[in-house]
Image (cartoon, rainbow, N blue to C red; front, side, top):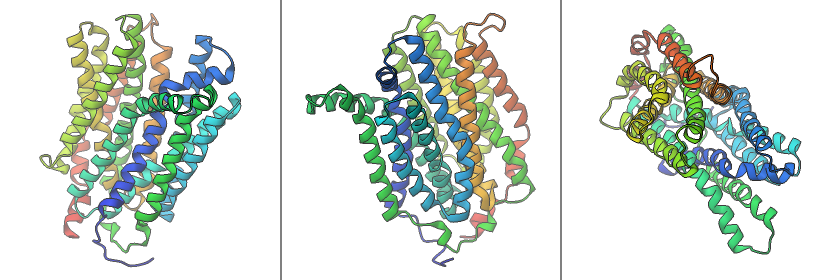
Length: 420
């Protein structure tokens, strides 16, 4: 281990490289949403809506399952070998497999490429958050940088679908004689190339925290931290499950019940993403002390459960907007708050625990999305997707009883202050 100044700051260009890494994998997921059915149509040779819907859902699930399986493994590797090599492997692998996915000429290769996409993208979240945690001098510094990572990821999800469609339009205008197949591949290759550029930025600017002689033993490894971790993972799971069920259920309800256009549904989800961004920015702003965020967990779970259950009863535009805003705000702060406290509570295993959180959230997203589609319209449970999602969140609320007290005794913040 190379001993350097324990309080050497994480320079702005280092932080910017991490933000680009989070942005890249979010764009890599989001840009596919509007163009994936077109790729399936081209490869499968059919325009049958049922076939396209089935493969779109299964390909999305394949990506999510890869996240669930490999995020904990990447986290353990980051703890053992450092975050920088894990980030580099993830970005370069993501770039190559995204190109493979775009150039696939058969459904088996398409599924294989999407699984590899998820495998490599699973490395970025735990490694990036763990590296920030390694450099944290104070709890405020950690919280602000975590918030920036969350915002970078959210922006990627927000602009990804627009960038995918925009790249197709630009490629068609610039290369009119290249053919429709080449034009359809352009978003994959563009995002793949951008991912390689970000990998270069990480290579040049991001240090390896394993080479730093910092006293991480001060971060909580006691019984309070260990007891809080399973509850925080449950919160991450039920939040992602509720959001997954809500997104699918609201899309189906918007088309089949409220007679909304695709544009209106897309606009509603864009507003939802903006509300999440604003909520995260406020919670991790200089006006809120990071240690007080533990008190937001249970109220946010209560608001999320109530709002999800209320979705079927909101038919007017104003009531729908209010319910969607409440879901976005509560869900938007739950995941980053859980991430912050997991990082503090995990001790030297923070990358591994953050990988487990990514896995829990991925599994929750997959389960919620599947339930939202499969249970929509069933008669034996009224408003089944929303009712069951609300019950799951209530289960998370019960599991989180007493967690503010546990987190108050986590000695991470005090240790970090003492180390200044």
